[in-house]
Length: 68
Image 1: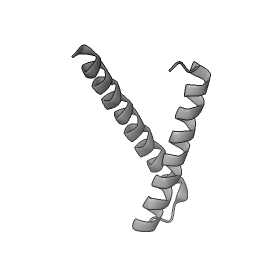
Image 2: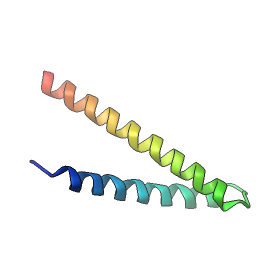
Image 3: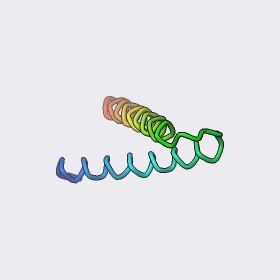
């Protein structure tokens, strides 16, 4: 299935935004930190790392699957 790069960038952004919000409220619930800016930075960093890690693993899996 062919999709345009603009649509894929939009989907990537939406996924990262949802992950950032999820990490923020998870951290806010479990950590006793008064500084929301620190929580926001941590949640953006974690969502970026998790998203890029998942994309990397998915690309490796697809490449391995197409090779065999």
